[in-house]
Length: 204
Length: 423
Image 1 (cartoon, one colour):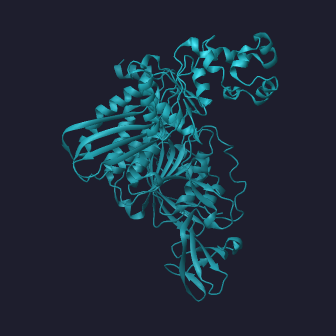
Image 2 (image 1 turned 135 degrees about the vertical axis):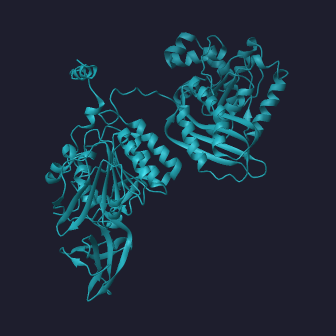
Image 3 (image 1 turned 120 degrees about the vertical axis):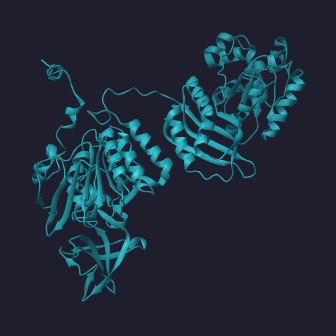
């Protein structure tokens, strides 16, 4: 028996817990069954950076995330949900109406969104960090992805549609287009066999 | 020592601090008394007269007019001073004789006790001392008798020594003039290490740290670090100070630096959590404090905030900026947030101020015509504070499929405005 096979058998022992197995733990339910079915881990990743590419601000990208954010912030021992450099002011009554616990929401404005985003992702104090960054470089996105894994945080980066041409280290990239009563989602990158587009009804 | 001020409380602490240079054993007798144990200091200040002069000079500096009395027991000195007599009694044998003519009121006994004694014809301390001890204790209480014993030195008195709150202030002259921010932090490192030892030895934590950088001509540059929770960890302080320093503009090279910890508080070490933050109820208080401090150090205090809802119908007034959320795991019912939500749908984004839309054929336009897709919602309120609004709100969709929250003024020109965006 080769040494690698022995090692593999040793690692099957039930009392040995490996960090890699946690990375494949179940995802965070997005609130849309059709989307969950296509996402790797059957939901949003709990640790890692995802990108949502939109043709323009307000295409329904936030409503795609709100059910998951509501579940995160209302969990018993929820960490923070931080909004970095939002283009407009998040409207507290609407967030509350969508079920988000406002006592877990913090907003960071200011001149250096990418730096603030990396700090928030890597701090371990946040369950989710949403960010609107102008033009992150590929190298910076790689750093953000590593920070998100370090802090076990879901990082969401909203970018314009044209960024789809650039390479990115994000674990998941979704393209999004508004439809008459919802959005059409295209999976651009992700550890899943699913390809093609999904139509979701967002606005009840 | 008795302070004859209208509001002596503040002066008392101040004087208590500066009196530490006359003797290490200083005790406060609020509201207006200060006791110094000066037997050991008499020689240094050339006797009672010299000490009296030095004390009066100190009081003059603090703009306090005191009555100074010297006596073999602390209480006797206090009573003499409160009676307004600046006596100097150095021999224990003379004490009772000197106390005897003083009025009983200077003992600050309860009024009815003094009144009862006065009805018996006992108006001075001497008369009270002459009363039979057993009867006195029975009629007026053991506490009063014990006080008379302390007064005459029959029993010893236990007093609490006053300790001035501690501060940290260290200065370092630099061998050369520094301009580089990174090197500044290196130059400050010995001071920070000293601060760390200072805090560790006293079990204190710092909540506000001030760093002053001296220049050749320009006034010193100040850099203040405020902490969200008491800090004892030098590494954390160094990292934060580094963030603050890097944001600083230096008018000239730095020649000397000074580090002062203004607000020191007792430090209670936190117990480490078994779980990772956020995992199975693991606390993330430390992480969240660190994050807020780091963000605020670089971006400014107002760049990090939380959100809160207000009970108002006007959209502009239905929310407010709040302090960032605290990391406490005890939360007030996290599940019941949608109870008082507005019945109608609200946009996730609100514009800082309504934005006027152009109109064609009575319909609003924004990058093309807007399509109204909802019934109007009338918000008409605020007549009581002059900030009245009367608007009909609609959900509109622009040609790109973006949902907008627009309203039409009910007043005369019936203008259209954009007020929010549905994310």
